[in-house]
Image 1 (cartoon, rainbow, N blue to C red):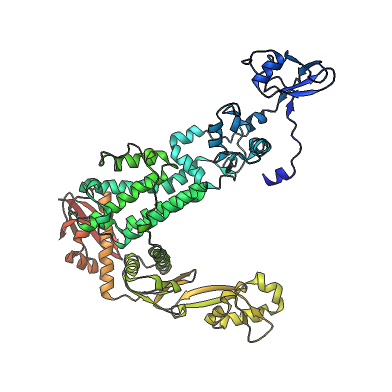
Image 2 (spheres, rainbow, N blue to C red):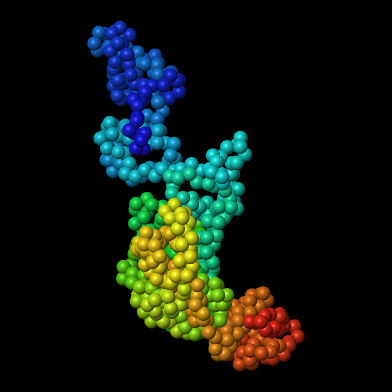
Length: 605
């Protein structure tokens, strides 16, 4: 409201209208004396009417009273009061304060928060503030959440005339109320204008609710197969893996962050934190631990995996309940009351989660952040070098100051995720990458226009590493051929190239280099992993259940034949037999396994 209050003008309260709250101002017809009547009782005493009289026109128009100054006749001024005065009086008028409900009013004033659209800056927000300041010398609200206008997909105000109005019911019927709510929570800060259209709601739904539901559905699928009963397991007694400890720490950090943000009425940051957690829960924790749910026995590790994920999903349902009440209720009802007779009958009857500080390990969270950075760079390096992730590599090198944060358990996660045998660190990224430099013309041109040829020639043949080291962190490099030419980092276009035998990627002070030299053993292992991928895809195409045992038949040559004859991968695909030859009635397909044509067939036992 800042600028509006600085330039505010006097508020003309009266309005020349019939409908509205009549001004309680009586004016003497003879001397002009003014009397403001402040209660029903005072009105009845001075005008001789009933206290229960209807306080609107025309009932008050004929009332007169005696002037206390000259004894003349006083009549009410014909105007009504600005309706915004009524709205601004709401905090006390709703309780008929000060005539009654004094304790109730004092308990509820000022309000914790109010919320309306930005156009109420000159309306309700202002009138609330000015009336409360005059009467009580303080603001009537502790927080004011201002909402921006809802526009169409192009940022244009919706109008029936323009034909760009989105029927909210069409979106509610198709994407659902949770999706609409979530879109508004995460699309932009509440006070900014938003662009509302069905496709945007669908995208918000997919990124959050779709991801969360997939994680929940994954748990239900395997828990039903194994008959998992959460009432029989206690998280405190489980043998938690490093990933379990990390996700539980991350969950409790999230609980604390969301709670703090909600206390501060910061909806967008808390909602986006929920969305980020849902993403890492699905695409990192669950994806990396899928094999923990396989096998027919309820091992200690499997029980820990189920119990951890159940605990995370239940806590998360309570966290997301104020934001997406329907999906939260669906998850909670299936995960909790079915197993605990004394559980609350609705997620909305549960207490909001409280952070368990004993489960928070910020060092582990920081280390896992470094792991994710390294893994992303490792994937980028593989993509750049066109090396599949299923092809094992012998070693990787990490150059970063943060590498010291990683213990052996975190390093093992990196190696497993990137399918590499050995994790090593190095001091200098120059061992694996070379630099190619070009002039940044938009900065060098104005400074050294005539000398660009000299600069270009130098950069084409210089020691790129030496120049990059000199200019990083605000440093400078003086051109040997001309001391007047001083280069800074913004003057250069810096390109990196991997040295022979390596593929690499760098970002934010971290460099990851992968050794691409392949031994026969590594190649054979890559073939085996490729076969597992092909067979798993065929299981899905054949619509087999996740628990179905199968027999695998093959016709192959070369390395693929060798790997199939060994059959070391059989347990990974739930195969009870791997047989050379064809099988009548089996689901068959010809596939490419690292350049070799292979015919595979699978059949349920």
